[in-house]
Amino acid sequence: MLDRLHQRLAADSEPTEQRAVPDMETDTQDVTKTALFRLGRLVYGGILTMMAVDGLRNVEERAQYAEAKDVPVPKFATMTSHWVLLVGGIGISLWRFPALAASAIVTFFLTVTPEMHDFWNIDDPEQKQQQMIHFLKNMALLGTALILLGLAEHEE
Image (tube, one colour):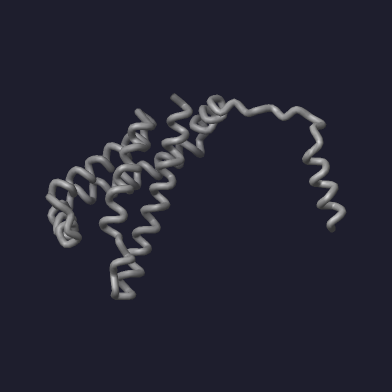
């Protein structure tokens, strides 16, 4: 087994062939034109749009929760953050101004998630678990937005 590892390492270090450097701009454009990418951004953007519309329909309830979390000007913050999410979700779905749309989504999750889902400050184990799930879900959505932002920046 060690012999195979040494052979592999030796083969990898020998400059036997020139490797082509991929053209990032062309590769990115190819990715964003695929059916799977389009379907994925429709699903992702659609879910974010639905989240935003739900938040805007329930502003009073969400503002009360924000107030309980000591968010300054809770109703304004709730409305503004959900409008930002709505613009981002629609922009990603349509792939119009994708860098701006992805930036809006990144901004939403970076500002809202640690403030509203601060599981590390909760003592009750059940509530702590629920808030940790929401926090981790939002971090996954943030990660996707960062990937889309990277693709959008290379496409421009």
